[in-house]
Every structure is written in structure tokens, then in C-alpha cells.
Image (cartoon, rainbow, N blue to C red; front, side, top):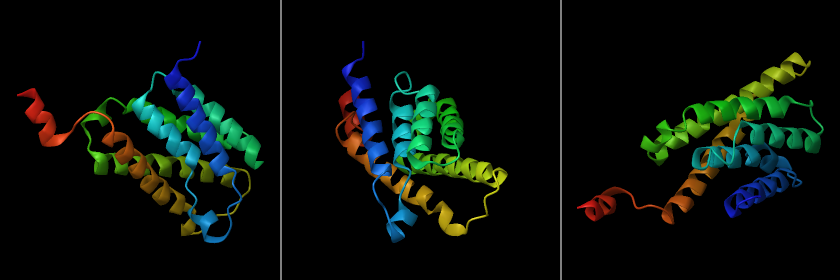
Amino acid sequence: MYTTKSRFIYLSLLLALFMSMLPWSGSGLMLRPDFVMVTLIFWLCRAPHLCNIGTAWIAGLLIDLATGGLFGANAFAYSLTAFFAVIYQRRLTLFNIPQLALFVGALLAVTQITQLVLRLFAGGSIPDWHYFLPSLTGTLLWIVLAVLSASGTAPTGAASNKRRS
């Protein structure tokens, strides 16, 4: 029923969920990236046929249940972000890692802005600028994931051009 790759995707999402539920405190809590969203963006770009908007919605519901926040807020934010990631997924193959990092940072900011707007509608207060630090740390985490995954996959740059000749 499930392929090995889809099992690996869901296992990595489960690991990201556990990382999000660790007892963070102090500056670690302020800098903690959204592990689940970073993992979702990674798989939405790498394997959109196995990880899609529905997967993002379910992951968001699980985060909502785990955190006890406004039910459906993370699900909506994750689904909206996944929608933008899937729309531009084909174009991303032309980007290098710094360009992809900007795109991922924008996607993480979309997630946080959506969550902020939903919290404001629910009667929450406006946070300070530290609220957006997880987008920055999430982008840095995504860069590490992208570099690690690229080191074991297809060749790039001049080495790739030599093989074609």
C-alpha cells in the first residue's frame, strides 16, 4: 500500500512533530523553527506526488491538537502555505540554494502571518518583532536540509556539464 519513500516522508513528519513538542524554553523557544512546516516544504518541493496540501492540512490539525491552540489555525496556515509551495514547485528546479532559501523564508513568513491574522481575529494581541524569528531559523534549517540532501543526489555545476560532454 505505502512505498518506502512515502513511509520515510511520514516518519520524517512524525519526527518533526516530536521536535515541535519538545519542552523548549527561554531563547530556544523564541528561536524554535516550525519543524513540521520546514519538513512539509522540503517534501512538497521534493515529492509533491507523495506530500500534498492534504498532508499539510492533517499535519496542521495534529499540531493544533498537540499545542492546544485555536483548532484549525495551523491547519489553515499549513494548507495555504502548501498551496503556494505546490503552485511554484515546477519553477523551483531552476533555483539555486540561496534563491530557494528566500522562497522558503517567504513561505514560512506566510505561515506565520496567517497564524497571526487568525489569532488577532480570535482576540489575541499583536506580538513584537521576535515573533518572526522562527521564520529565519526555519530558513537556516531548510538550507542545512537542502545542502545535506543535495550532497547525496544528482551532480550540479561543472561536474554535471563534464558528464554530458
